[in-house]
Length: 202
Image (cartoon, rainbow, N blue to C red):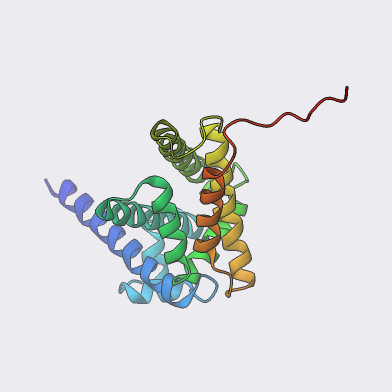
């Protein structure tokens, strides 16, 4: 019966690595964090650390996945809707530039179907799009958002704004990402319910 024990210990060590790595990168930055430093932080050699992951890229992709889980759990504890949770995450990201750097780097690299993070990013965007679209539809039913908005289109625009604002913030840390994203959500709510047709010349 030793195999289940070894498997459980392996999972526990993997979780420890990811948790520590998340903290280290948030604190010191993606570009300034090496695999050697992460290995030292959990008492392993570089080879020992990578024994738990297929590659360095897979390790960092898993770190991003853990970040999403932590953010989603925090939003659940606060009782936030998906849109409000996204604004909160973007606000919090200003405190963890290393993770924003990592996300920006991998979101581009994951466009390659061969990249270890490709499927994870595809699933991530699908999940976020679905939750935001559902939130938008509920707000439409409650009368707080115009009924003529397409929920999926609006969700994609909110996601695009969040990602784009993070890139701008990396270039200009004075930019208030959360304020701008909240502003976009407010604009969605102030959109006209009926599009006005231009008057035809007589």
